[in-house]
Image (cartoon, rainbow, N blue to C red; front, top):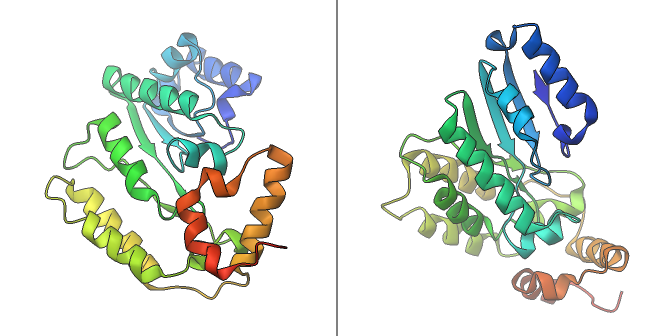
Length: 231
């Protein structure tokens, strides 16, 4: 059974549904896949019910750490996300049926910050060599958020190639990063522009009271020569 979000566990029927399956004594035959944005952590009663299922795959939809999370995932708050992620990892250690992974979606907002997210996750998870705990997703739409709008992709590719030379990097992560780099090396035609990306971000800033230039200054400096700030 697959649950997707946002945050599916915040729905009042989620707890009722899980409890019903447990009471029917069929949970031991059922695998769950739950996508959570870590904006909420369920009660001990719910997590205890989850421990009775055959397997629970927790996919944490976390796209970046710190301000990258707060900007790209507004109104998400990093301190809450960080706390929830660590609590899920603790449950994975407590219950054998839990598998906890992160599933970042790659967009213009986070494509240059993936190394920071990975370093954080492998520190939290204390991953071993055969631990398959990161799933990269690539957002193609809306086109103005497509990572292939990023200027100077060669520099980004070289950055991640150098990143994977770390001898301590788990083998599965090197394999995932190799696929990620291959994807960056095979750009697709994007029906949008950096100007549209910037204008979209500034429109959101007015609604959310954020500031693209201040929140993601490294990204802004890279796209700055390619946009008209006066629009």
